[in-house]
Structure formats: C-alpha cells, structure tokens
Amino acid sequence: MNPTNMLAQVKKMQAEMQRVQEELAATTVSASAGGGLVSVDMTCDNRVTAVKIDPKVVAPGEVETLEDLVIVAVNDALGRAAQESAKRMSAVTGGLRLPGM
Image 1 (cartoon, rainbow, N blue to C red):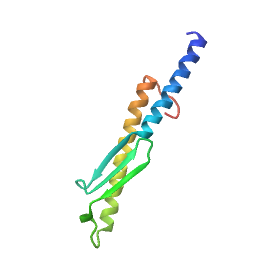
Image 2: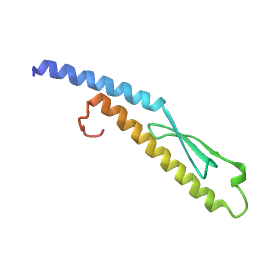
Image 3: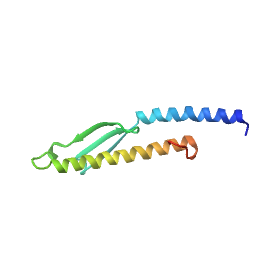
Image 4: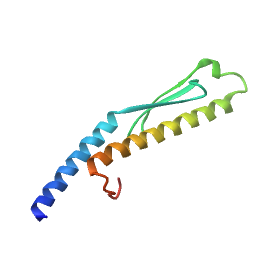
C-alpha cells in the first residue's frame, strides 16, 4: 500500500473516530434495579445524567437497600455504555484492536 494512501486512510479513520466519540457523548443508555424502583440514565462516555428512585423505596431502615440498588443500576448502565461504545468503535476500526480503544 502506498504510504500516502495509508496516511489518508489513517486521517479518515481518526475523523470518523472523533465523530463516533461525539455521538457516544450524546447517546444515553438507561438501566434499572429492583424491578424499576431505581433507574439510572447515563451517556456512553460514562456521565450519569439522572438517578430516579421510587418514593416507596425510601423507608426508615432501608437506606442500605437503597444504596445497593443504586450501585446495581449504575454498574448496569456502565456495562451497557461500554458495550455500545465498543460496538460503534468496532464499526469504525473494522475490528482492529487499537491502543486506547
């Protein structure tokens, strides 16, 4: 392959990766725990944008349960965001494993 063509392809891939990263920052995923009693929304660049807690969950002596539900919901949202990011980045890189991706 011609080095000039290769450089052009790398630049194109970098631009496409930047575009996908911007899309991911604007993409929101949601997850919940406790049958929907606690839910978390976050972007695919790992920013939590909302935590919703059903008022019936908050009762005296239930703080530990509430905390556990929030942890489960946040971790589920993080996993979904990582999956979506990997899927979209793989489409850009053609399955190449690049450092930092």
